[in-house]
Image (tube, rainbow, N blue to C red; front, side, top):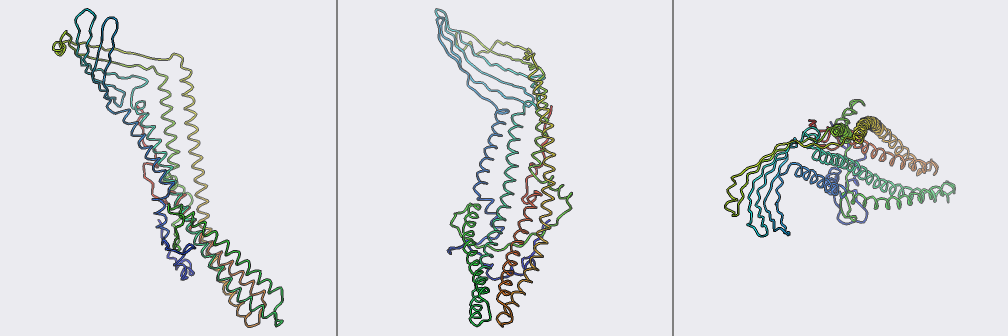
Length: 479
């Protein structure tokens, strides 16, 4: 479960007025975005994600095609014609065939045939033939007959699992960029304020030097700090422009889009113990579901390989009702019949290749089990790392806020004493440098804390809801 801490309770400085207008450089009409808005827009418009959705649609069409091919009713025209030294033979008709889950093939065909013999009367024949074939042993049952459908569905599930992880990773990337932009904007604002303060202090120190109350080295040091602040400002503004473009591209917007961002409240997570968190990850991560799916797939293919050791035995039966005569009226009576029932078999007596397939499939089953254990251990490492980062960044943020407050008090006191002539220029320049470092450190730790929470949810698999059918492999028929 997640709770949201109001920003004003997390960091008092979030109330600074300029935060309501965090905006890209360049002016113009800015697009106001909260973090939630940015995530929703990225999930809908990110170009890589859209491309992935199109690929998924292709996988769905492949699965549908497999079902149609394996189970669909097949209707085909029947026709043949030719002429030779003995005469002509023409045949036309229509046939239909369907296949069942156990391999049963049932077909019906209606045709008309005309045979014209040189020097003799023409023979006309109309026929309705029904044929049934049932595979036995090797190709009997859903295990074999459903393999094209099951394989296509597994490919679709694998693609969906990868796409879901891409969506979750995209959310983390949006949070990272969103927080980085806010940090850069704060860095620029802090450097501008620092430069303004240092300019005032430099002028005062320069005047004190003329009076003999300050040394030349102190004045030069303040001048150096002014220059460093100007350099950081230029670097920060350049980085802000580039990162705004990267952010716009991530959201599927034009690169010249400008934004007005608002610092998001921090997520406060009810963090469970490491073993419980790992259990959540194993239950919610689709990539672990894929590892379990691979085990089930390997076991099924092992059964198929063992089936190939059996002969291909088929029971077939057909019945034909037909009529023949010199006229079509005679052929249309359908007053004669013919039938057949029999067994056919096909088997390669050299089974070495089939046995090697069985051995290879057994190795794949063992390898897939090892992969699942590897994924499990990797998830344990990721969960422990995510938990540690979440707790560490929260503590760092608390310490950074305390340090910033101490640095602010020290800088204010140093300025007052310096302006009163009771402190050196070095003491106030040191205090100002420590203040801006502490301010940026506080914003930096807050950025890390915000991102760490979303990364932890991504690690646990709960950042975005995943369809339940992607988390456990479906039950397969093994008959």
